[in-house]
Image (cartoon, rainbow, N blue to C red):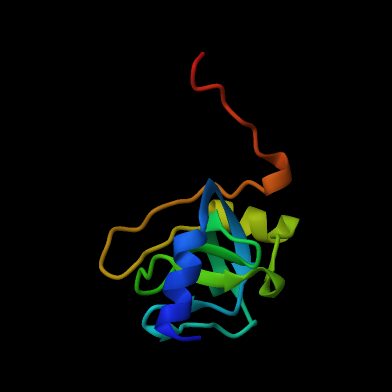
Amino acid sequence: MTEQEIRAILETAQKIEYFYLMGTTAYHLLGDISRPDDGRDNLFQAYKETDDYWVGAWNTGFGFIDVLFPKDACRELNEEEVEYFNKARFQIGSQPPYKVDVVPRNKRVKLDKDA
């Protein structure tokens, strides 16, 4: 995928309420940053979408943002993965470790911000 193709896709992406998925194939402006389908390093946060791609960032690694994840190469987390990630800590580069609350999309509760 070329830089121009990636930029064109990013321009059409719509913001969404973020959530977590597992992915393998990933494209960034700097190139293909895909990962093998062999483990728990494949967790990413999606915060935008197009018809064919989730846009987000890996939870571990160098901290690339606005990464394209083809939807057909992504999947929801299973219960075991949700439990594992909710107990885990993550670190990107030299930043301090952080914790995420992984809630499957179908179990998210929308909060009324006006209340």
